[in-house]
Image (cartoon, rainbow, N blue to C red; front, side, top):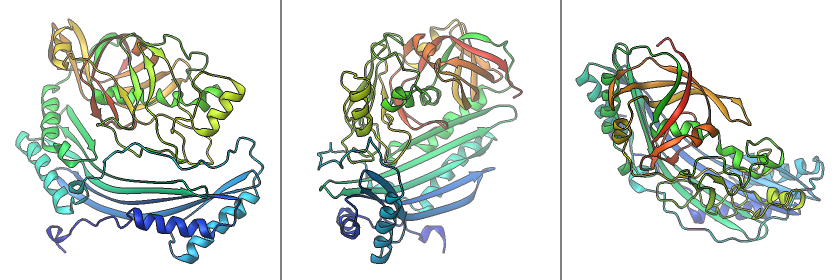
Length: 462
């Protein structure tokens, strides 16, 4: 059937149907206490390369997960069978697995019913995107490449998700969300450019504008010259900022501090970053996404993580907060709604990062820089030193030399070895915060930043 005749499938799992399935699972369980989750997703993606679509895929699935608690033990079983027999089998399997576990001294009673903040993240226009609609967005991006004589590749995708949970103490939670995303890379003879965007609302994205920005970067960085490695003043665009900070915020989980896996171990309350650094985890921020509750159904609280450069708070799942209060009393150690589904070894993490920005545009940052480097994005980032939070990786798809307050042309890409902690001590200017997408971390609300003494260790071969 031609793409223009294919309508976008719509998610069948609404709140009423989710409640019905969850109630069946709770009724089927013979455990002392039971928690049930239900996750439904429809995702579709159109991929293009060499200025043409070469792949169009779609997936639809619904997964039921039953967690049984029996005599201080817990285990989980998962199924995609939603008939009565399949639901009952999952409940029995969860109890069978729980009986085989060792008692868990940190296991808490299931939470009681909670209240959640209201977030509206299911957008009908995003859910309605059809294969033909995605193809039209691709056509717009390819047209930019064709006009410039470039080769382009990327993706255009959309999805619908619903997540519901209930437990035997009466807790119920439900969240629906849509997502739209594009990524585009422009390739010239010896340069490239890149752009990416993601939002629950397709109206917030402009793939054609992203393609034009990527094209301009490829044109402006043509015939790159080589600069010696060393420490430079660097302007990092939001995608580059995001992919570096993504390695830091897992350290704000209470369990990682208790286990001494975090770079914040022994540093809570210290002035660790520059006074111009303010960071909050805020699920209700208008540019954020995600459910307003965590893997146990606890409401996600707004948590100030860094104030004036001082590490103020961690985030906690219920078990971690109880352990922290018992083993290493910390002021404010309470459940913040950042836990993952139990059982797990990770504890919790802040996933709705908002870094406060400033009012200095990227162009103004460039104009204030006698000599420096502008970085579009980074890739292949790996952690070198977890306590000093030293990362290594490479620049990519638009690296520019700044001379006398202006872009002077492209520069060969660098490998960097840089402590994120030191980077956040050396931030000189911040631009307006935006919702940013990268390739190495989850989406965040972050600004572009100007940083002194960013350490590049070697020049790459491209």
